[in-house]
Length: 116
Image 1 (cartoon, helix red, strand yellow):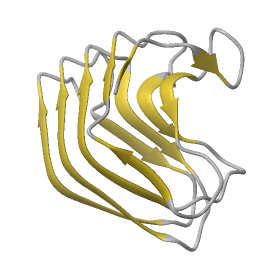
Image 2: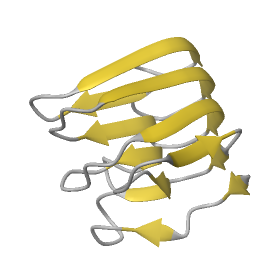
Image 3: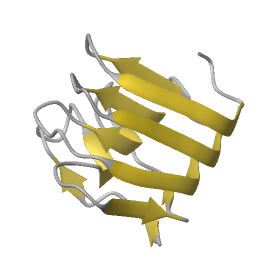
């Protein structure tokens, strides 16, 4: 699946996202591409937002020319695995990872041409 930004959870200037990986179990996002996602400082191609404790199978992704490639802001007890991806040409960070308590493993993710 290829997407240009259509979804915005916090208004146009904060966290515009190509894909929002929210609540639920048994969720899958495999082989997805996000390109050209701009907005506020926390906009991204792929976003795991706070308040949405969902578990995703997430792999084989591409994130090009976005503000951040991935933006995570969660407190969760789930073990998340993000694997086999490419993040290129993002304006801020390849992966902006935050909140306070979570378990994410990034495996085989190629990040290039990003400032952070």
